[in-house]
Each structure stands twice: as structure tokens, then as C-alpha cells.
Length: 87
Image (tube, rainbow, N blue to C red; front, top):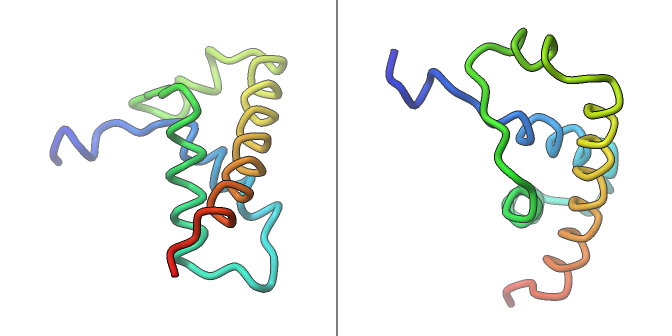
């Protein structure tokens, strides 16, 4: 196992969940990948090694706030990517 595979950014999962929650029929993989990149660039990195560590150390309120931030950033990223699509 490499060091690269040993850690994850918790916001990646939250952004994926927010993308799934706001998915539209017209969305394609390239668009959604751009949305994910833009959203993640506006969120802080929150790295962890073991998922159980995040669950143990996060309060319910902190997790709720992180989910809300992720959803807001995905919605903003959707608008940004739509307005700046490559032709």
C-alpha cells in the first residue's frame, strides 16, 4: 500500500453525496467532474486515515455544517461550470 492510498479527504465523500442529491438528467460525467473539482477547491481539506476516526471526532453539528457547506459549494460550482463551459 502506498502513502497515497493511506489517506482520504472527507470532503470528497460529502461532495459526491451532494452531487448525487442534485443530479439532473442532462448531467454528464465531464460536467460532474468539473463540478466536483470546483466545489472541492472552495472547501478546506479534511484528511483522515481511518473513517472511524472522522466519525469518532466529529460532533453531529460539525458534520451537519460540513454537509451544508458541501451542498452549497456544489450548487455554486454547478452555476460556475454551466457559465464557463468549454465550447
